[in-house]
Length: 190
Image: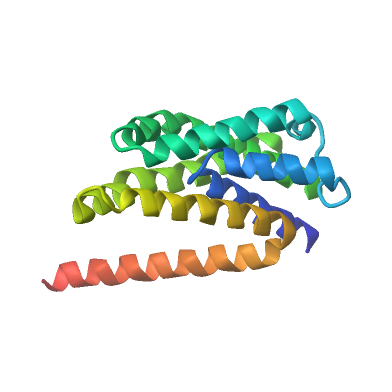
């Protein structure tokens, strides 16, 4: 059961990194620094809990949040984050999976990279352009704020309550597959 919870936690953290690269890393670092009994990071991931790294992550969170709210800058930010978010997801997955599991670090990094990269791709290539087109750009700021809040809540819950996060991710995955299958059926009948 502990292995399953660790994997659920890792998936939740890497998925939230796809929305905001630095929030899950900051959450991991703060919890590991102030509550080491809750989250005790192994080498080399324990560097995330270093006070100087926490300050740097806090500054990076602020920069990413501001850049994501400014029109035109948010598109440039998404291009830059195409590399940063998957890497952050890989680090978040590996750091959290390494706490309670013996998953290979290479496999953990690859899983985190794929999960965060997938979430970022859906966000940057599908959701944000649709919001921009539907609202003439007016909906981008509220959607960005909602993404940041969701990334924070997901990160905290992924560490504190991984079973719930695993269930949420599983239900979301099932709903996405169901939606995709229904969409495919409708396209074939049309």
